Image 1 (cartoon, rainbow, N blue to C red):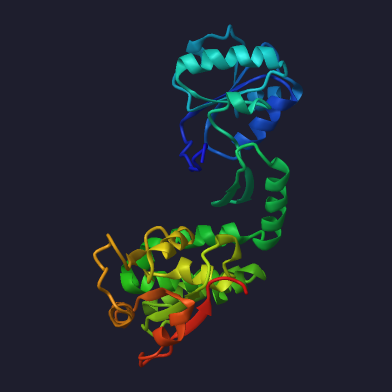
Image 2 (tube, rainbow, N blue to C red; image 1 turned 180 degrees about the vertical axis):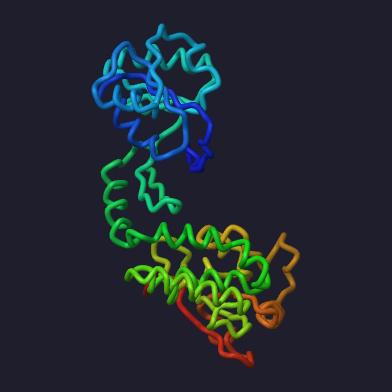
Length: 326
């Protein structure tokens, strides 16, 4: 990745927008969604930008433009409408040490603005490093249809209730609890407009100390791996990897699949240089069983030829699914 994706806290931080026309207005509309302090740097502003200044939602710096203009800024957008002037201003911003985005000149950008799906506080950012903005918009359109308009309100409610959940829901049950909130009845109720009923259901579950469907049992998913192509991975396999507390890879080559898993999931790679070279299938089974007994969700990546043998020998039901589409 040339650009590392990251969300930055913008409260009480300065964002400078060089330009006074429509290009500057487009960046202003984006930054107004944040809590940043916005300053327009231009001799004159169009009516829209002047109104923002008059309303106290932004400031106006008429110049002259020097490196001091941008000193201490978190981010600078340069969009005067003149490519040559913008390139010159870019050099001044670099002297100041601020991150800069020069509109329509990707080679001069240290920061890019992704395409956003905004369900504040839930925000999905889609970036292509400037290589395929049309594709980014297509993905945005798809996600706009998938994520219900009021999902952000449910996320905000969950945020307000996190302290209460931390008090009443044991840490071993919290992941299952929040999975239930965002994938089960609370979300379904909230999506169809029954916000109060959804909130009452969540609060009741918090007082009871767990999700209603949480029996305190772990789960083992044996994923039959015939290929490791991420673009062919089945949806169910990806879902299980995202839910897993522990992932066991029976072969070192399967470690590439970890890219699709939760970053904080525990991982065991069987094979040379991993301290598990002598592990047989029975050793892997024991590791999976022990974690499952403690209530963990385990994904066990095994070669297709061993999938049936891996699923044998467990007292509890074990789910076996393919890694990739056939």
